[in-house]
Length: 109
Image (cartoon, rainbow, N blue to C red; front, side, top):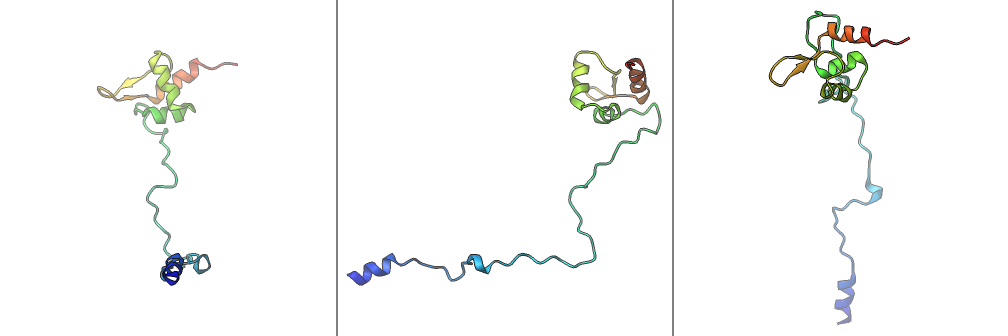
């Protein structure tokens, strides 16, 4: 009876289980080809030097004015800020000429 209790109290050890001493860090690959990432590391900046009648998105306009897109959204709600161009039923945009006019009228010394 005592032998059975002794056997039950022993810890079972999995022979396939690794200990902390068995860890080996992964080796760096020496392949010449660079690794392709899923996401681009840098977003493409909008091109403002194109057609002055081209319509910019709200994000591009905010970048052009050095503002947050949320600031432009708040200004649209208060009917203030640069002139908004409606591209469709829901899409809005900004013309670079309107943004330049807005900057020209709202400068201070």
